[in-house]
Each structure stands twice: as structure tokens, then as C-alpha cells.
Image (cartoon, rainbow, N blue to C red; front, side, top):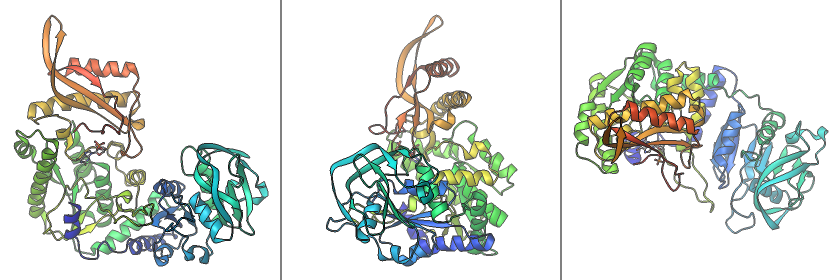
Length: 548
Ligand code: XMP
């Protein structure tokens, strides 16, 4: 699908992310003041994205680039500093990623983290060697830097809990460097010479509780950033970019699912070009209770967009009749979506552009441990669900440099209501993958009612923000029960509620017993066809979040 989409975009559209990002920042400068940026170089770190997120959270724009990205690409961002990530290699190992010359030649402040620190040490004449004991996990460091030294430890306690993860360590500091901190296992847990700083531990992870302050100190005190990466600045720049890209006459089509990403993309483009954006909302009949109404209310009435509403519930049900295999379900839903989308788009066209809510994690190029790069992966946006190769749209992806939390902040700043901006992720195939077995109208009605209870109760318990996803699943299993004086023989409903950072791993949420009791009670009493409720206590892995 990704391939098809790529084929459907103009040649060269994808080339040179750096050029585009520089463009975004140039526009920001024109619109307001220049947005300060730093570059994170990825040496194969487990935590590269996390560093980038922490920097953005501190209000500084930041991009994660492979360590061997061309200097021009990094410098096009006009960074105020460079952060060197950790990595799994030893700096002396054959083929280990090396520090690119441009980093020190640029004269910019540098923060080397773990492997990044060792690269700095080696490049500047220090000595790095294997530690007698590898150090993984929590450690305590003693800060030896004086208060007057300022720098990254300014304002922090002299004893700090940190997270270490290294086999090598600095044995001899490079000339001119001063040690800033020690730990039991690392005589040099931090070092600095002017604005070149190395940390043996990981300030970006939650296990380094004051890590955010360290990163802030680097960004603000060492690099002189002003923290002007704000939703308002982003919106101003993105609106200018969309206007420039689309020009005065062209029109943009956008598949709207009611999910966060497509909603924010639509609201942003609408601000830029008004009614020349046409959102198409396909109601596939597989949505949760109240969803079609919410989307029509928000976009049609509140935003006044020329929303094309396609009620295709019947068509989807027909396509799903008799299908029980999860992958078949997904395929049929994807195909039907495209057909309905195209039919309605054709009626409202012509359109030169197609908007997608692609996010930054989908376009980051990562450096692999061996230093070879994985190809840039572009995921097809679930909300559009794949487009035929002969579609000749140009793509507009105004969110492709944002993380999910930033998208939410932008959505709020654009005036989208909390029901849209704070909603949990919902799979493209919707309730179809939460009805195990065949999807029928009665099964959908049953699941929708049970799911609405799960949502209402978890929201009422004020737990919605702490839980990544929570929903009901309808099982194709009947069990015996007793209600009043009668015996029942009805279906089982499973409740799934998970905590997660990014859906790659997840754990089952420790819901309070009385909440579970209320859920079970209400579902069995209020939803005909369900007489038993179970709670899923499987983490991911080995389970997945969805049941199909
Ligand atoms: P799993 O079930 O693989 O899900 O742990 C991880 C995340 O992806 C969502 N998901 C989907 N989203 N189309 C989507 O748009 C799909 O086919 C699909 N399957 C799973 C799931 O809800 C979770 O957030």
C-alpha cells in the first residue's frame, strides 16, 4: 500500500526531507521570529526518538537525522546545537559509526550522550576503553562541577539518580576537558570543555528523573535557545506552507475518519485554504457509538467545512458477510473504503492534492547498529486506507514533522474539541476487528452498546487519560448464565484496557476492582445478548492490543 501511495505521488516529492524542513523553518522566520532548532544525530540508539521528543517538549524544534546525513542537510536547519545519541557499538569496533567532521568544525555546542560522549572523547584525544564492569540500570552520580561552572548541571542537586547503559567508559579525558560528575563505576560520568559536553548516562529516559532539567539546561543555557517551538508558531508556518504549496486555485481532498491525525490535518489545511479543502467522511458502519454524529457536528457545523458524508454502512456489511478471517476483513474493508472514497471524491472534484495525517515517527530514518540505514519508511495513513496506483494526487502531509502529543497540542490550538483531540487510537477496520467471527448488524449493535458502557465508566472514573486504549470485544462464545428465574445462553464480552507509550508494547491496565464490577454489572444488565464479562490480563508482547 505504501508503495502504491508513493507511486501515486509526484516524482521527487519525497526527496530531501531536509529541504522541506528548512523550508518550514524559513517560513516560520518570515511569519514571526526564527524557530530555534537543534539536531540529534542517531548512532543507532534505542532512545533516539525519545531524545528528540524531550527536546521538543522543552520548546525547541529538533530533528533526528542518521549520523551520516550530509552536513548540508543538518546545517540547513541552522541548528543552535547538536546532540549525539547513544548507540550499541564500541567506538573502536571496526565499522562503528564515527563522529562526522562537520560537528566539531561547525563550532556549535555539542551534547554527547553515552556513545556520543565516547565519540567526543575519542575525537578530541581522550581514551575510551571497555569498563571492567558493564553498567546497566539505575546509578547515582555525584556532581563535582561547581555551581559557577553553569552548564548542564546548573541548579541541580549534587547527587542525582540516573540511568546508565554502557560497556565502554572514558579512561582519560581529552585535553582541556574537566570532569563534571562521577559514579561508583564511572570515574567520569560527565565531562565538559566549554560548550562541548558529554554525559555517560541517559538524560532522556524517565529513569533519570532530573534528565529533563539537564536537557533544558543544555538547550537554554548552553545553546541559547529561546523555546519558541510552540503550537502557534507551528500553525503559522504550516498554514503559510500549505498556501504556498497549493497556490491560489487548486483544491485539496482529505479522508476524514474522526481520528486525531486526519482531524488536525483537515483543520490546519482548512485554516490555510478554507473551502478549497473538501473532507470526505466515510461512515463504514464500523464506528463506535456517537462517532458519525460527532464528526459531522464538529467539521460540518462547527468548522463549517463542505464535508462530504458517505453513509456506506450497508455496502461494508455486504462485503463482510460470511468473512471470519481477520486479514480478509481488513482487506475487504480497505478495498471498500477506497471505492466509496473515490466515488464521492469524483463527485466533488477535481482535486490536485490529497491530504494525509502522516506523523514524524512514520518518516524518521533510523541508523541501524551496523551503521547501515533502513530505508525511509512511509506508512500509508490508516485513515485513507490505500489508494490505487493510477491516482495522480500530489500529497500534502502538514503533520509529518510532528509527534502525536504535538499534533494534539496543535489540534487544541486550532480549536478542535477535546472529544476529537484527546481520543484514543481506533483501528481503521473499526469494530470489525473487535467482533471475533462474522460481522453482522446485530453483533455491531451489541458491541457498540457494551463499548459505550466501557468508555463511559472509564471516563467517569477519570482514568481515560492514563489508559492508552480501552474497549469491549465481542467473542463468538456462548456461556450459560442465570438471570432472574431463567437460564441464559448468551455471548461473552471481553474488556481490554492497556497502558502504553506508543502501542509497540503495552500492559494491561490495573483497573480498580469496583470499576470492573460496575462494568460487568452494567454490561450484563443493559446489553441483551451478553451474559458474561471477562477482563484481558495479557501484556503486549506476547498478546496484541486488538484481538484480531
Ligand atoms: P496491535 O493490535 O497490533 O495494535 O497491538 C497496535 C495499535 O494499532 C491499532 N491497530 C490498527 N490500526 N488499522 C489501524 O488503523 C489496523 O488494521 C489496526 N490493527 C491494530 C491498534 O488499535 C493499536 O492502537
